[in-house]
Image 1 (cartoon, rainbow, N blue to C red):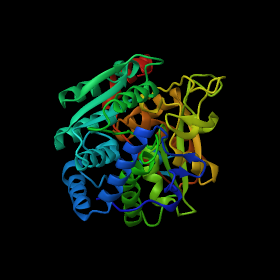
Image 2 (image 1 turned 90 degrees about the vertical axis):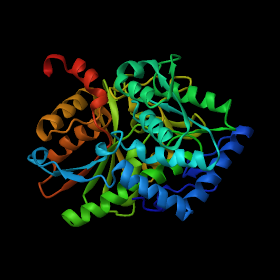
Image 3 (image 1 turned 180 degrees about the horizontal axis):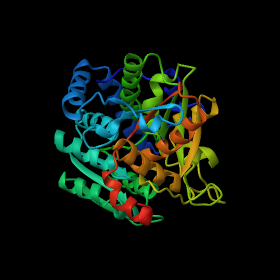
Length: 402
C-alpha cells in the first residue's frame, strides 16, 4: 500500500528545481498544461478517496507488497544480498507503480488518452495495462532498435490495445522515443496526458513519478526491519532515468548510515563512446526541458549512448539523482555489458531468478561489492524487473557461454 510523502531531500522548490537541477518547461502552452498536471497531482494525493482507490489496486491488482528475498547462495562469498522483488509485480516490473498513478490522474483530469515513450517496453506494457484497466486510449512511442530487441513486450502492448509508434530517427532508441512522444503530446495536450516513464522531464514529472515509486522504499524499510532487524548497510539499484532507484532510496534518505548506490551502464567500456554512464561522465546542461547531467557531444548536444539494457540507454538522468550526487548523499557506480550478462546468468543459476538486464546491472555491482565486505554486512537490491523480455536477446549475446 502507498505511503504518503517524499524525503525533503527530493522535494523540488517552487520552480521545480532539486538544487541546481530540474526546472519547469518554458513553452507557454505546455507550461499551462504542466501546471494543470501539477495541480491535479497535488489535489489527487491529498484526496483520501484517491489514496484508498490506489491502495486497493496496489493490493488486489498489482500484488503489493512485493517481498524481500535473502539470496543465500549469492551471499556465500561475503556480504549478505537481499532482493526487493519488484519483478513479482503484475506486468513484471516496478513501472506499474507510477503507471497506475498517472492513468488515474489522466482520468481525474478528464483526459481520454495517455501518451508515453518506452525503452525496454516495461513502462509501455505497464501503461497499456493501466489504460486498459481504466478505459483510456494508449499511444506508445518506441525506438526501432528497442522494438527489435524487446519484441515480447511489443506484442504485449499490442494485445493490451496500445498503439505502437516506431521511432527511426537518430539512434532509434529511448532518447528519440521521448522526443517523438513529447512531439505527439504537444499536438494533442488538451485531451491527453504525457505519462513519462521515469523521474525525468520538466516539473512536475520527477516529483510525481518519485512519489508513486516511493512505495518501494517504504515497504522495503519496514519489511527489512521486521524480518532482519535494523536497516541494510547499502541499498542498490540500476539507474537509467532513475525511477526504481529513487523509489528505493526515498525511505532511506534520512538514514545517514545507509549508503545509497546507483549503478549505471558502462556498456562496452567507459573509455569508449558505447556506454550510458551519465552521472559518471556526463556534464550539466538542459535536455528535453529540464536541467541535469547528460552525455554530450563536442557541440553540447546529447551524445549517442549504448547499453545492453534498452531501459538504460538514455543520455540524461533524473534531477533528484543529480542533486544527490552534488550533495554527496548517493554514489554512482557502473557495470559493463559483459559484467551484466554474467550477473544475469549467475542470478538465474544460483537463485532460480531471471532478472531484467536493467536490474542485472545492480546485481553485477552487488556481487563485486559483497566480495569486498564481511559476511555481517547487508546489501539490499531493487530487483526492478523480470527477464522474460530479454531472453531471446540474452541467449543471442551469451552464445556459447550459455
